[in-house]
Image 1 (cartoon, rainbow, N blue to C red):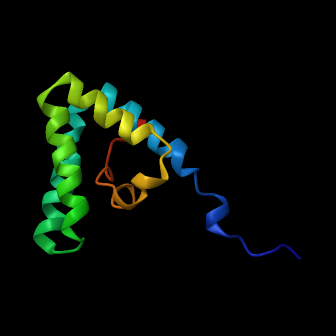
Image 2 (cartoon, one colour):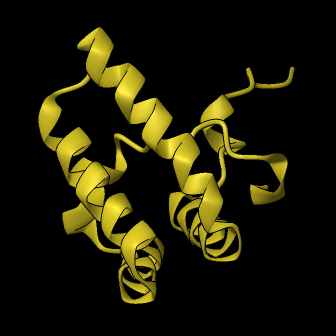
Length: 101
C-alpha cells in the first residue's frame, strides 16, 4: 500500500524559489508593479500586518528609483537569510509571469 501523498514533499525549496524570483525581477524590473498592486490590495483589505507591507513597499520603491536600489532588492531576495523570513513569508510576488518557474 502506498503512503498518502504529502504536498510538502513536492514543494520547491524556498531558497531556490527566492533566487529564481530575484533573477526574474532583475531581468524584468517592470514586474515590480505586480508586487505593488498586491501590496495595495492587501493593505486595502486589511489582510496582512502592515509591517511587512511597508517594508516591501520601501524596498520596491528604492528598486524602482535606482539601479543600486534594484541590486539591493535582488540581493535581499536571493539571500538565504533566516532573519528575512518574517518579511519573505509575506511575499508580494504572487502573480508573476510563469517565467519565474
